[in-house]
Image (cartoon, rainbow, N blue to C red; front, side, top):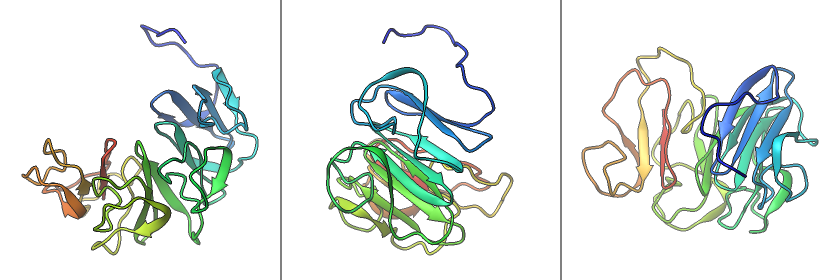
Length: 225
């Protein structure tokens, strides 16, 4: 698809959430309907095919969507209070624990009982239940899962050392909470964890900042508050 040099309106109304991945974009409307468009070579648009769409295409199997996050070749959402993921799965980033195959329709991430917030990075994903531990799954080469290991995992595993967190990276969080403490873990070769070092961290490390309302992380690190 040709590049667009200036912003253009997307033919979609009542959008309440928008997320852009490496080569696709997804949105949620006020009716809880999810739409995705762009490249679809891994099934990341969730419509059951691998055909790309230059305009928003609905995800027919999802309803009551509250959160959606597009990433590099896969997508995750919270639908009806349950996390769902679809698209590329070569590093277990869909969290279904059953295979490493791509899936072009949403799959449930097992083991959830309360409404989570979700946030995928390039090849791993994390989710948090309100007042509970964050879990992560997928690629773990740099410790980005936060379980003090570097082996990939195809199922959600709890993040080590921190018992409660509000949200994983890129998830929307309440504003103006001065008690919020940010944590980062994973690759740190350029100091991206913010802890004053360039040492890789396999468990959450406190970032010395206060009053953080949002966190966002790249491909090989994870952030939370």
